[in-house]
Image 1: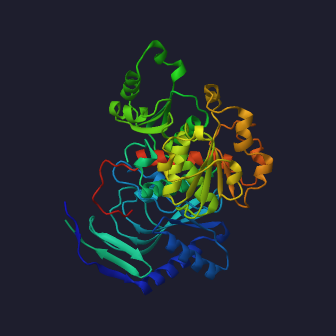
Image 2: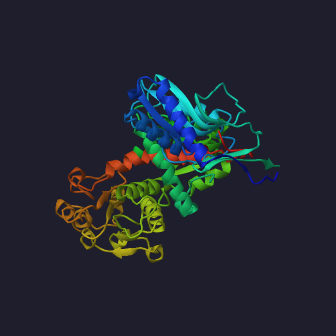
Image 3: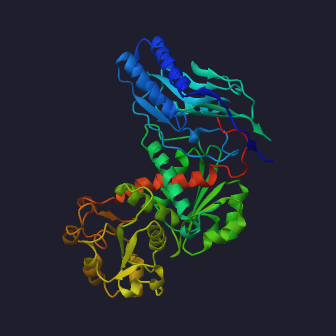
Amino acid sequence: MSIAAVPGTEILGADDVSRAITRISHEIVERNSDLSQIVIVGMQTGGVWIAQRLRDAVNKISNVNIPLGAVDISMYRDDFSLRPVVLSAPTDIPVDLTGRTVVLVDDVLFTGRTVRAALEALNDHGRPRAVQLAVMVDRGHRELPIRPDYVGKNIPTHMSDEVSVGPDGVIVAAVVQ
Amino acid sequence: MKHLLSTHDLSVDEIVGILDVADHMAEINTRALPKVPALRGKTIASVFFEDSTRTRLSFETAAKRLSADVMTFMASSSSLNKGESLRDTIETLSAMGIDALVIRHKSSGVPQTITQWTDAAVINAGDGWHQHPTQGLLDAYTVTREFGTKDSLQGRSIAIVGDIKHSRVARSNIDIFRRLGAHVVVVAPPALLPSNVESWGVEVRSTIDDVVGDVDVLYMLRMQLERMDSAIVPSLPEYCATYSLTPERAAQMGKGSLLMHPGPINRGVELIVDPADVPGSCILAQVKNGVSVRMAILFSLLGSGATSVLQQGAES
């Protein structure tokens, strides 16, 4: 089986990504009356930079200092036997999550399996009061009952498409098999 | 990587890779709930034909923190005493369904030999004078993390003092330390040096006073007192006068230099100073790091599913 990616289509540009981050940060403030209990946690590695920018934006709007964390889910995957694990940076959760509201952040929401693993990983750092999910792109094809609370952009895709997200924009590439 | 038999089987990239995974494991070990589901459903047998405290318990702790199941085989209370052969013992354990076998044996090469008799991943936890690869890895982890140089020992000098000839720890550590860039000095009386030491790429010195003030790491080996009977060393007091770390010598150690020992310590023999009184002592850090590094080894051998790679998008 050979795989060749054709040049991708840019769906969002850098400005669109910035606007989405600003909008989501306002939605986070609107939805959570007690911002002192919020922790923003990025999923290694794609969610980390988005989490950082969301945290900075929320801090700016609300004048609070929200803790920022990162969660590595490689030890919680359900597909060890299917594909090799690529370890990113270690988990870094700066506070006990018990009683807190966690805003979990990732770049792309696809099957939902990474989010399932992240929920399990978060539980090992305390029992959050609630977990909300923020993603830059929801590309569909869920395999688990998981839905996002904050979405940068809904993008319908084929199962085999490749979606890449960065500060410079979002690109979808069709993969020809 | 299917087995871990010798440090020589590992490339520098693989060594660095294991040390990086160990950072993840170290983070897990700091949690209030230090356990992850990574190796759920895997069974690991620890098979020790020689006495051990820290290596066996360290492996068993590592396996349990990754949610694997552990079987412990004790040679002293086994059917070996009824005359069962090594091969039959290994085949019997394997037939019960195990994923990894951690073995220590007094004869060099036994871990290699048993790979023919089992499909499980074989991890050498010490074989004769030959190798103790997990000790080498945990010591490399300890030194690199203590110095904050992560993947390299470039420019560091490490002295290994004691019975080099009969030491599997020395063989594993010298190999890894050198390949990470360190300059290694061995300090021992001629009778406790291997005959081919010139080919090891190390500097040889004959008293601890030659090195104690100059090196970044002073690695004291355990004096294997059981060998004193064979009259290799003329007398213990004579040996100690030239090779033991006394409080006076410890005071000459450079600022920021480390004291290491693989354990168990013979107090009053190789260490006459109380290691708790040496500022650079990281002997307990070695034990602590041993759990993280062995978790990394088990995870690397059993966790990352070398069976098949799904050829589909990697996103979540």
